[in-house]
Length: 143
Image (cartoon, rainbow, N blue to C red):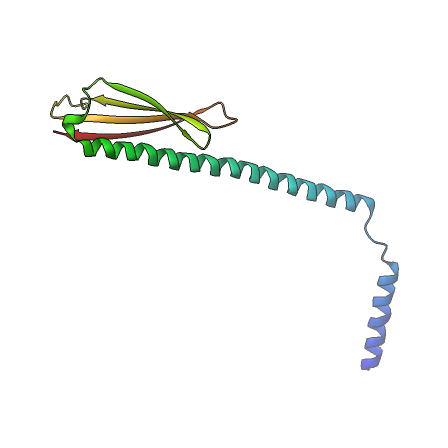
């Protein structure tokens, strides 16, 4: 009984293997098309991911630089801060990018004169981009 079942399965398997002819040209073309689309999508993700990582790195470095300047202003104290209305513009370089830094001193929005509002803005353009990036930090220093 078992040998009869094995014999039938063996003949069926051998018959299927003998009649298999491989993949058709259309199946091969569809496989190549799907592989190409997958590779293109992967390259787009890699390229965009690389730009995003570069932008995030620049933002982090520039934020740390202007935050350090903000801490220096706070440490200097109220009397060493320039008069309100003063704007100090300077430039520094981060990773080959030129960054414009503006330090602006104003009285606070409520009109009080016993403390000053300090705002630092950084502006730069990423390589290959037409848009300008900006980071702004604001603090108050009391007398």
